[in-house]
Image 1 (spheres, helix red, strand yellow):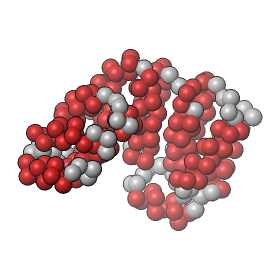
Image 2 (spheres, helix red, strand yellow; image 1 turned 60 degrees about the vertical axis):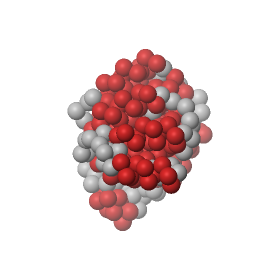
Image 3 (cartoon, helix red, strand yellow; image 1 turned 90 degrees about the horizontal axis):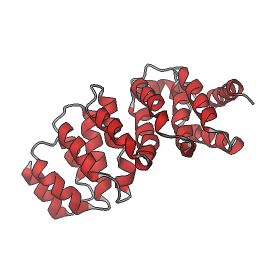
Image 4 (cartoon, one colour; image 1 turned 30 degrees about the vertical axis):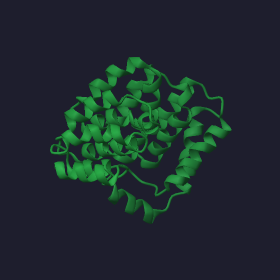
Amino acid sequence: MNAKQLVRAIDAELRGLGDPDRALHEKAYLKSELAHYGTSVPAIRAVAKGVVSRYPTLGHDEVIALATALWAAPIHERRMTVVELLDLYGDRLGPTDVPVIERMLREARTWALVDGLAANVVGRLAEGHDELDSVLDRWAGDNDFWIRRSALLALLVALRRGQGDFERFSRYADAMLEEREFFIRKAIGWVLRDTAKKRPDLVYRWLLPRASRASGVTIREAVKPLSAQQREAILAAR
């Protein structure tokens, strides 16, 4: 099956699994400008896993061609499938694919697409390729808040494991801490919360002197894994 046939087959499967009522609700919930089939996230993931199961040997160029072709149509479920496929075929990707992924991040305009691309796809690449540090540095200062959010979330998975570059995250978060954009505030809190599950003292020491600058959204997320005493100290410092 060639790329065009595979795209048509995936599209037909996603459409067939859709629900018109769900499509209306999801489009409104996400404030989406895309078309929606109303296919659930578990069903989308199952479609993506089915592609990988049927085509386990797809090479790099085939994966990128498939992802690009699926993404081209402004349909939410097709783009969600791209996020899943790039994650599942992640071992085919390399630093030279970041411009394609960055374009997708800029076009996504919703957490439902941005977060998986940033945390799982870019995060995996950033862990394995130090040359992408400069890309994340650039993203952290970008005018587009979705790209700034992506710089933060690209560090999430490694930090969640108790590893990763907390110093880099600290620099990014410190510069964004007083931003008013909800999705930036939430992302900082999210990364801090997940980091604190393994290293609560690290997060506590970082957040305490910054508590007066951090938003309520950030604080509420970040303190969840901390001890009662640590939580009280941070809330008092606000």
